[in-house]
Length: 197
Length: 368
Image (spheres, chains in turn cyan, purple):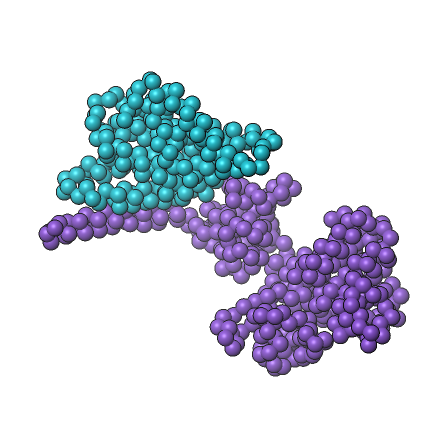
């Protein structure tokens, strides 16, 4: 494994060459269901990014100081999931209180994030790849921004397509998958820059 | 695996979940504690002190102000609208589909989605303060046809109900036979709005209907029955010269109340009442409406039989109520339409009214 990669490279790579959606196909459910409108997609992208950074940072600490010393590696999934759920819950309450405007925008999406596989995915990648704290935080920030970028692109295209004449057979989810596939192929173009996996 | 490993696993997991639980509990008590909030209803008419942190709908209900809600606070029915002038925060995504541009300008919100976080100023229609629960005594029960019963209930001594002719009540059934739970359904009031100490309902037996079967099989004169109301926006607007009234089956109930309302108030509106039924045995209140027709020339009664039998000797309109409507109503000029009946009949009639030039602002209906 490569713990010596510069955090900056991890950051850039996780947006472009190892994009959570277009390269790893993680977090697809909310990506497909909340991408009909650009505005709400932006809200969800923001929320996912925020939760990713916070959960990854906390999960790194939990992993390093609670799971590693007693060598209870088989407990990592259940503990990671509990931490994610608890954090989303607290974040929602805090946002409702101190940032009501933002909460009003994100309110219904925050609970959805609890079960977004991109969140658990990033935490597990961080463990597998033996990232240190700084690497983990920048990896999660990049992954979040990459997820945000992908959902915004899909939402923008779907908004345009809403008024387009389409063959009836491809309307709806089918077309979303085709668009995602084409975007994923386009992102392969970035893979020459550098890779982190 | 030895015992100590199990112990360690359980210990760590318990400690982590206990830690998280403690953190969430603390966060909840700190972050979700909005203290005592004051709700100013209708410009200071009522001041309510409530504990913040819950939805406006539930806090108002705890103060005995019942906002109509069919979905129970899931933002799917869009009924629980109230105007929040101050302290409601921005419109939520969950509310957007239910609040029109016009309503946005009036600061309408779904009360089930608005969380009370501080002092608020609200406007609630005065009608909603009238909604109350009554435990009445069933004093009369009569078969109007083979499947429609007329129920007459007396309100408890000293209590009265203020309703607009055309509105409905929720009628509660008690557990009976195989039905183990209380249930409620909406029924239009058929009695006069001026008679404030009694309520009459017309209840048609619906096959397998929990409440209608309760009424038709288990209920007896002298029993106590629970109701709440009045509800609904099916009542007289009267910005016209003539009222076109259309009903089928037990849909006659609110129309009867409306007709008496116009007559008792001495309003000048002409009224034509198209009453649709299948055969002669489905018609009721015939003598009463014929008598009104005699006493008040402003009222015309047009019963229509869709399938009159030879032995019925029917000399009135034969055919669906839509046929009579098509032939006898010439234009929408100076008219408002009031409809109550089954969805199929109503949709067909509304289509004809649209063709005649009625716009939606002049058509009022109550579907069941």
